[in-house]
Length: 414
Image (cartoon, rainbow, N blue to C red; front, side):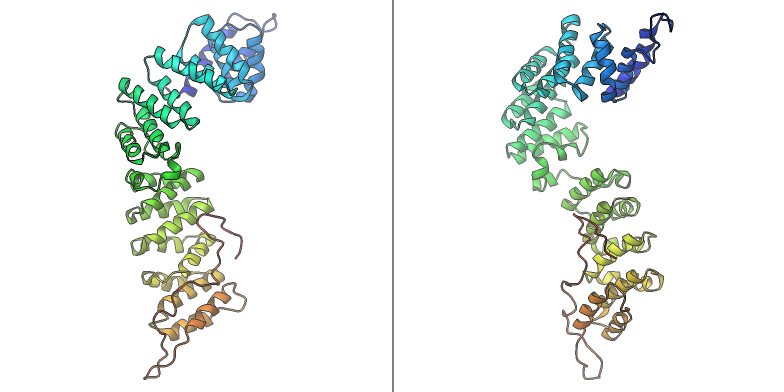
């Protein structure tokens, strides 16, 4: 069961017991006023700072209830004094005997006090005492926190001899191996963890792996379909994380999901990185570009057009032709004209010139239009038709705004 739900359930069960038999106004307190009850409820709800005062009042008042003391120790650990937390965990262990959750709390309180050797000793003792994989997982995570990769790998291997089916221990072994630079062994351990049911992307954020994720051993573990699953509903940070992983394993088959994230997200960085990835899919993403350039979001259309202006993919010509009639924002329409002109300049330079000359003097994209127009400077052929030497219209444009970097700010220019 989820630990937080367990705490809330205990609060529901314990609070009435704490107040049982008491009558308000007869030297007792109601459940709402009782510090022990408020301590348990606030801690169960994760409101550790507000739990501190009632928890201290309850603990210092001689509270004996195990659930109250556990809540007080947790509140001190998360928002108060780790030394107080340590004292309460020891009080519980001394009074009621050793239990892994209390030993875990004790180790973490020692760790918070930078008494790492004592914390490690508590965890190693717990590994010997307890028959579950929990202490071993905690010990390995503790060792990796200090980049003790050798010790962590050794502890993980030892634990796996007892718990060979534990996916978290396999994953942690992989993280430790990655810390040692043993990418092949790391990937093998992580693959095993995934086969056993570990969360498919948790490993990508652990230890040194984020700095080594572009290595082929790890790329093989990334599934584009997994990366885009529910992408449009994720918080900004997680969506960006997945999109950056997708850059390592681009697959045009997931273009619809990337486009959905672009269209539905309220995050400018997500939109821009999504556009950058979509651009890499080429012609396979043509339907998605049509949807994006038709979206009601004016700024999204602008950033998409700025990206398109830099390139010359011919598959966008039919879409841009339709946007000539449908785009109502003047500056965006200027970008449509420039993007289309670049793509038809070699086959129809006369029309390309007319598209560019139609851009008004007050249009912010005019410098860019003039730059492209200057490249359409071919001489008439034998039949008197204007021509453009192949290759002269392509290449980077210096006047394209640079505010829409997929890895930076969206900028505020028009």
